[in-house]
Length: 242
Image (cartoon, rainbow, N blue to C red; front, side, top):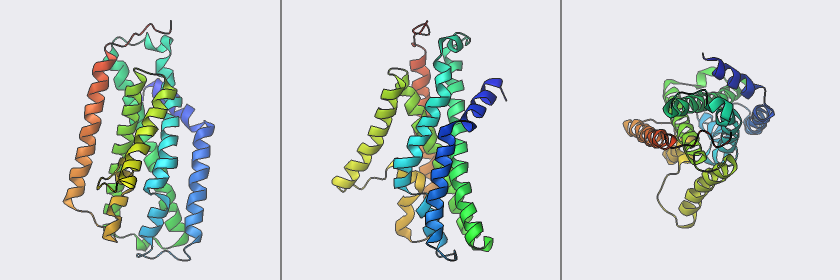
């Protein structure tokens, strides 16, 4: 692992934001678990959605992910760091690599908390192969969703400052949610994909081939955003802060 990644990961795990995020996750999980005396195969999906749902994604997990990204990626916008790169493409690739690391970390955290709740308050045998497939799908959706959000955030920072980028990213997320709620539009938002709440109407944890297509579609959106950022980074003024 490159020294810059080691430094950024150490900075991430030592930040107050990380521990605040962890504490809130634990409090949320504790609240859900206390409502179930014993987690059964029928209740496990309720516990999952009690911790990982579209509202917790929208109001808590995604904002913290953006705060993590802002904290870690601000280093790349320092002119002393910028001037060490020989090409804009390499600089952009390194930023997206950090976004990928943060996406994996956040996804592992929220799913580890869920499994911890199940193990503590139930039996491990309530997790069958069907639910494992559901979890794998959720992890794929969450990592891809975080990649889209993180790349879009960095795309905006190429033109605006980090504060405006945060506000615009969150505004778009809230805007899609507001449109679907007010106008009753049959549209699944990104946070609903990430939390798998679009499958709630099925009443159980089933995974079908169509879910794989959805993951590939989201990943395609990430690729488009990545390429757009790669192209826009070529025209970035690397001496703007000198």
